[in-house]
Length: 98
Image (cartoon, rainbow, N blue to C red; front, side, top):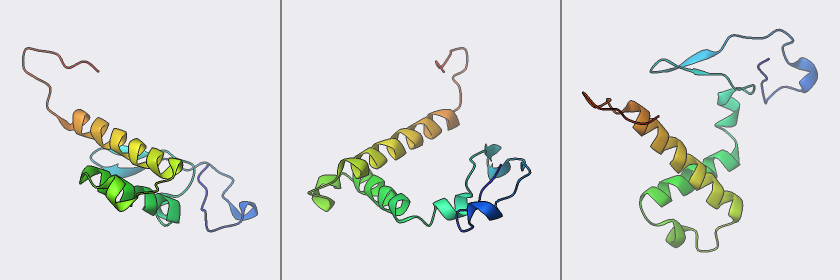
């Protein structure tokens, strides 16, 4: 069942919806609309912390960083690393461990 974060639970759809494409052949199968999630302040702050970490200025930009924000930057870093690994072509004649 897909839920819209902007609607009250009583207004959620009762029938399941098929997953929709994110591009690159990937499907989003979450139960909350990604449009809503992308507007959450915590999600945006996590993305900003990830960008600061990627630029090597996380502790400069966030000298008193909270643990949830630190974890958000770590989770996003791991997700980006996995995506980049999956997008790499497999070596010819060799094997890349999955």
